[in-house]
Image (cartoon, rainbow, N blue to C red; front, top):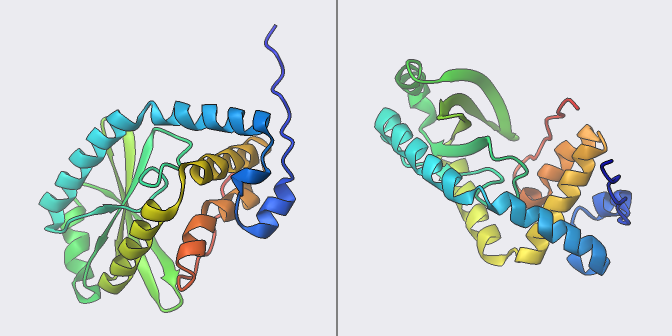
Length: 204
C-alpha cells in the first residue's frame, strides 16, 4: 500500500493573508519536504533552459524582438515542466503587423488586461512537447517587467523560493484554485505593485 501524504502543518489562510511565505515559520520537517519538492522541480531545468533558448530564437526570427522569461520557471517557482512563459515589448501602433507576423506560427489566445490602461496580446506555440505562451506587452510595460524580474532574481532567496513553491503546490493539491491563482501573483505584486495584478482563476 502507498503511504498517505503527510499533512501540512502550515496555516495557509494566514500565509495568504500575509501574501508571502516566510520560510522561518516552517517547521524543520515541513521545510525539508518543501525543499525536496523544489529540488525535484530543478531536475528539469537543463531541458527547459534549452527549449527556452530555442523558443526565444524562434520569437526573434518571427518578430525581430528579444524575449524574456516572464513566468514562474525563470524565477524557479514553477510546479510544471511542460510550459514556458515568454514576453516581448512591441509598439502598440504596430500590433496589426505583429498579429500578421505571428499568425503562421502561433495560436492567438486573445488580449488581456495588464495595467489599468494597457493590455497584452497572448499567443501560444509548442517546442517539442512544451507549450510556450508569448505575451506581447507595451514597450513601457515590458521595460517595467524586466526591471521587476531582475529585482526578484537578485533578491529573492532560495529558501523563499522553496517556501513559495511549496505553498503553491499545497493550494493546488487542495483544489483551492481561486487562492492558487492569487498566490501565483504574490511575488510579482510584492516587487511591482504598480501593475494591476488581476488573477485568472483556474479549474481544479
